[in-house]
Length: 327
Image (cartoon, rainbow, N blue to C red; front, top):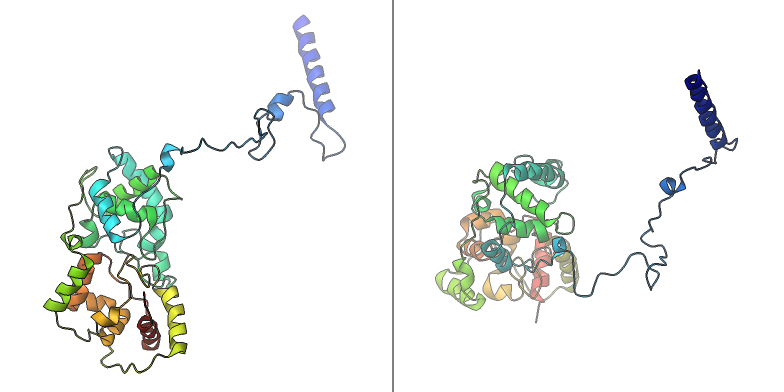
């Protein structure tokens, strides 16, 4: 009997609490009996905070420090540094199949739209025609032979039209993507810790390289639709349009006055015939496969030139801009 009374009394008390917590005004949440559980005592990042002298909740890191996972990446975008990354960078931890499976998920999130499921540059953005050029085929022998450090460099700071993922993905996640590409798309051994060898092409100075090219290979008009050009005086209207085209189509890999991913166009008409330059702009894939000088340039810069699908008129305007470049 006493037990039954206790149960009924408990039900009565709980019902009273529930009723008190309700209100006719539906915008009111009711009464809180455990406010510490309902209202967090944590301070918002941008709120005032009486705990610190400057009353700021989000404190500035100690001068000269950074989180370990945000350490600066000291290799910039030029080919020499991509090769240096291949010769010096290894994953901080030994890669396992667990990392490969995690890399697959990351690849399918960040890479597949351009490079495709199998890495054959047939992703949706390519097949739908939304990309101006095809991305790298990750199964090409050139990339199969590249080191993990080189791929990590590309994922981190980008390459050509490919953007940087250094600010989007953690260092660990970037290494996981690299391992997935190497193991599953390129058929390389799991967890191989192999550094790239030195590239003999880069031991030759730029001046010596061009002198050797001039001595070894006669100047030609290249291979493509352009067989003859009459230059004449500088056409400023064409120059202005050429600048716009260069900035829109070429500046991801070329800078006007200094070497970048590819060579600078400064003085190119002193080294190559104008027809050769235009055919290289219009027909880079055929040129690299069949032209001796274009092959040598690929060996040195390790960056095949993308076909921007320009018209002859557009290429001519870019050439006119090249004629005006001076230091």
